[in-house]
Length: 401
Figure 1 (cartoon, rainbow, N blue to C red):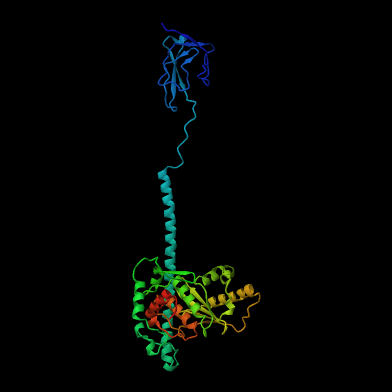
Figure 2: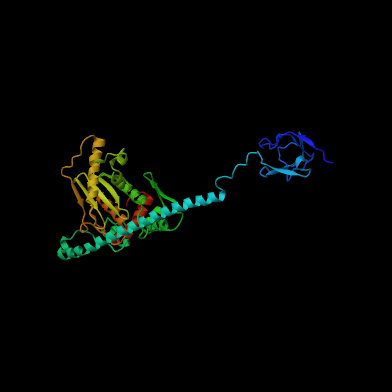
């Protein structure tokens, strides 16, 4: 026979379950709880006897079996008990694998953008080069007409010079082409040989020249900013000698900064320099893929533009004249007198012209070297291999020949 115990309703273990009956009911003792008992259900409650308690995962639903006598001794009502425990926190927003994919995507996007910019610069370089070549082709006929029209004795005095640097010897009466000795040749060859590209070969003027920089002077490589800036400083150093005009050379980034950002961006560049106390200002100008030179001559009141491909750049001259006016107001507190000043661009017939697409930087440096000592510009394209070797030696030893 079954032993029935009184069961007060609702039981304490089921506080949220509504009571369907108005009077107490009974359940058999040791009524089984299946499949598992709730973790918070006690083993002995008034009017309720259960099996031995069992532990189970909190996420599983639980069922309690209760007997009611008026339904018959074997009648069963199944009650589904929902666990009252707080659910476990959800997983993080992203897993490690997703994070890696997202990071890779970001870097891929940046790489694509950088590649796009590189391609745009290449396209711009090709466009500028094409324009230069077209201008050069248009001027060929003018050059032919000039040589046919002007008698030989009236041509511009540009020295033909030797075919190679080895024929330019001081003993032959040409002081503009000092001899490169065998010992110097060995040093120069060692500079151009392969090695650690970051090896420092020369330091001066708060500038550092590495093997990578010096090798831009080899063969038909384009000169970089470091080489040109170092060479301009050598010209300034030499100008301290007696009987030479005083020279100040601007950094290769000066004109670009002045043109794009205005005077305020460069006014501190001459904080320790009085540009009005010198005779000449040398201004290297970089046009993306082409080097030129502008020269301010305070003695002659001229601003002259030198382009080894025959280009005319009146805008550059006007920008430099405006710079002089603003610099005078800022440093001297007075207006700059522009009366009598002339803005000039040398024509292709007046100065040596390059015959390839690689020596524009060399021509700009050679223009500056000749002008800085008040000498005629008397070199040609044929001299460039010699001057490349000579500049490498001069930069290595930090002195001009």
